[in-house]
Image (cartoon, rainbow, N blue to C red; front, top):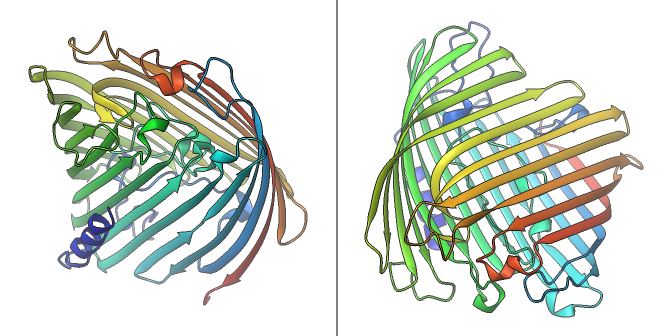
Length: 449
């Protein structure tokens, strides 16, 4: 896994010095610079509100949290088992911005202890890198990489617990989760864009994701997966507020049983390949409000031993919206795609929707809410009886209140419901409810101007 990360870094460093404009760039005063629309950008919609927005800083902090969960041993029996947990998360983050470079590096280990079920005690690792560099006045390259090791899905900073939302079809789908199972995930994205004229841009990107369950006994019915792919796009600016374009995307997803020696096809393995052509339209109603639509045909090539290969065509579509006000933030996305991985074996037609909102009620009070839904259906008639698919629903509600300049308190509620009758780890007790309270100490030191 680490070798693949280092390889992606090496490939990124070797990219030719072309040039473009950053995805977050709102455009120069003369209107010459183009934005990278959400359907082809690796970046997510921003989630900060009000005074939370900052750059050029060194941030350190410590979060102490206690939580109550009514189902910490999901899937191990017909009756849920509740428990209290106590967590400590140190954090260090570096954000540096210059005229040509913007880079952020965040490291967040975690230590969680359970009051009754001590076998669930865990040590988490979270490492994230976001690097954007303008190679010339018309070319920008970017790299994002995140690595996570955890045994508690509620501790992870992604969309299931109210994280960022992307408008790209390359975003990782979360169709099913094992809430308290050991798992390693790694996601890497690279992108290079070239604005070759005042209103024309081309670009290419690559993506790699890996999901690994180290302990197979914890995840009966779930599978490891490796995804690799790439995308090329053309974008044309119709006006200062409207963009149209076309994309081609290729994705290869290999699934295998946890504990297998490799992820090649075997008795319990699959390989899914998809080719997707999208036409997209993005509208920037204001500098803080944008809307995007994309759609087109998708070709599927599925190989799953011992069944015959499956090849088919299907329509695919995505939609997203992002709005950022002085005190309010909202983002939502929808996708209809054929994909695989995320714990499932084979290929599944999915309909997924995500939304989040944050509102700064007053200078010292901020509330947030997030909701996620994914419905999957097996595209293989040979496998539909043994694993027809299912759905997942999650909701999150948070309240934040700063106690002092460096001290902050947060209260939250999370609910997770999954319906997969064929997956043992979630079928017996599919619901989890979690309430928590956390206190954090943060120290931020500005870097430069």
